Length: 333
Image 1: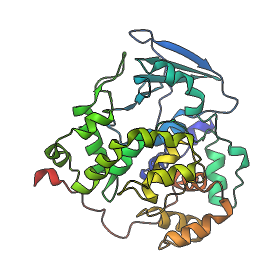
Image 2: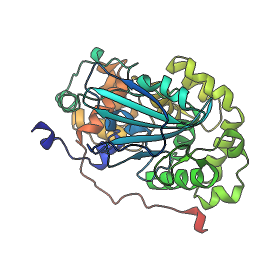
Image 3: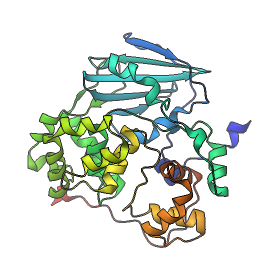
Image 4: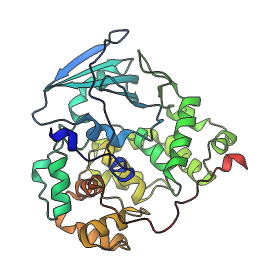
């Protein structure tokens, strides 16, 4: 009965990392891949744990299917791979295809939050406590991959999410390769560093990516190996490594380590909406800036990103006072 009254997804809860994963009956894949089964010791919600990895409903690297499975197409150090994850009862079944299959299955528990420890989190506000109570399956994912989070995060700089999602979708489908195995239609693995570097300027323009963001991505892919090394560093050091690249600042680096490292304290600063949402939820201050947000989150030091995610998942946001930011498309110019 409790599931019938769970909060409905909203634009804010989706931003907090909520993806609706149907509870269907799994169907057999057309071609068997490598398989790993794993039993977590906590209630697992695939939509919550893996939700932050989806870049919009049309993300060609992520799919939630009616049979209750979540599919991901990743470029691993071993090569491209497709991972299908399904939870049935207490057991999680991972199936993978492609050269990166073993790499993906080896890190399946960390991807599903095994490296996270939410027991150290102590809610200090009613909104946070209620959100945590309603989302017992929340764990912070750790992908172990930097570039697959860095590039879409750069695309999201200073534009609407719709524009960024469209650019990611167009570029991955055009320059990536089809996902290995029996992945759902039109799933693709993102391009490798060399392919990103060779994308012509007019293709960036057609995808709606301005020169500033395109140049940042080009600088990052030239040192992709050094960027990937950051996954073995503590989150703060990894952010410092990423921010060496011109065009990558605290906002982008935090968005990356939240996914690549499962960094519980990497709060996103410099965001257009997050300070107001946090300020409104915790203090009724819809005009809060970064300094006020950080002050309000200070009781959660060490767990500030988790607290911010729970606030977003609570759906408690101030009423809109102005029209949405208009969507631009430089590709039409």
